[in-house]
Length: 262
Image (cartoon, rainbow, N blue to C red; front, side):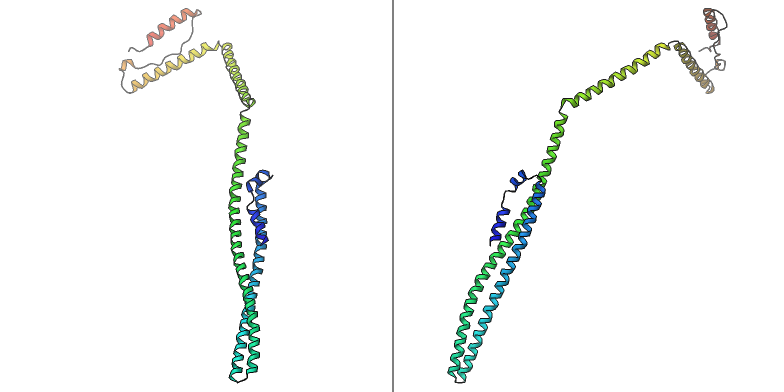
């Protein structure tokens, strides 16, 4: 019975306290369960030995009881044969076996009671080990959750450090400076190439004139303009006079003469 008391103390130990002191609670819990299972195997062996003793005592009791019954039968045979002396001897043998059978019966009943208690203890022990397995899984899950929460907390603590945010702010300011420098460079380039603006304005004017001419041609094709107002192609402007002002006035008169009436 000592093995059961030791196992009971092992199972009832404070596992939570063990977790707080162990370097690796999961390995410790697994090892505890391994030890429990090994001692359960030893307990089963001892229970099996006790059961075997109970069966042996029962057989000895049954044998002695059978022998006593057999000597009683022989005594009855001697009485029928009118042999009282032989009958007395047979009864004496029967009495010896009756005493032995009574002793064996008492021992057998005591062993049987002990075996029944051992079986109950063994079933209870097995149930406690199964409970320990379930508790181990719960404790390991709690351990993993605690580790995850600790990792998240440490990560958040690291992020709360002002140096990390200062780095982001510094990089944002640097990018803002690069963008400002790029815009300034584009503006300076535009100032340096200001002479090209005049050419760009004439290109836009020609593009607009071309669009108007295309629109007039489309309307004429669709019969939406009188025949005498059919669009004419706009000639390209050319400077023929040496003076800009005179050339401009001549060009205006020419354009007015060629422009179709609305």
